[in-house]
Image (cartoon, rainbow, N blue to C red; front, side):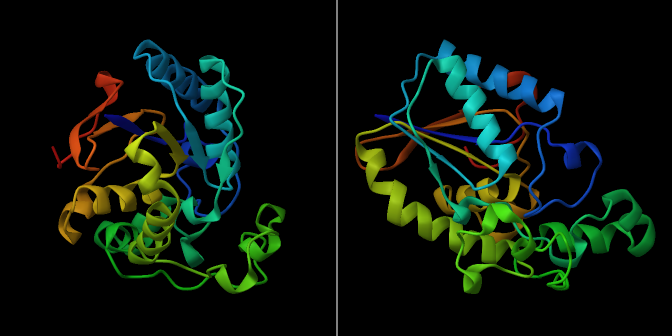
Length: 237
């Protein structure tokens, strides 16, 4: 049996400010660092040895993973992949979620945030929040950089990467992925065969490792959040 551990980064500065973050490369808050430390200790308590580590290109996910590795006493390099980035929120990027609810209504905001295939309006390329203008993404081919994404778009890039780079390794290895609410949500849709309604309701808490047990046929035998006090309804097991 192998373990796949999925962890959404600890609380970020823009999580705290309730802004649509997407591909903007913000740091962790002090609370986010505490969440990452707790995640590392929970993994350590479960005596799970990680063979491969993956993260997005984004600072908040990278820093969460580095904090976890420090607690585990690990010095392994980890793979940084833009395909594991958060969903690009297009023109919503940088806007306050509560202010948008007051402006266009809760139902519309929920639709833009959680619908399967609706994209927000594209973010203008001259915006300082556009990935073309953020040094973190200099290595990403320009034709691959989005102006906006739906959850379906996010799903396609995340799942393709998972199938190509991770799935086969799980037959004999334990793997940890440090990523984001929507990239993890997308991967859970694939792993647990969720429909479009279920995926819209799936909540991913910050800094709480989701441990998924994989049998020798690559089937899921069990899954649970390691921090039971902050576990969300999985809807899946």
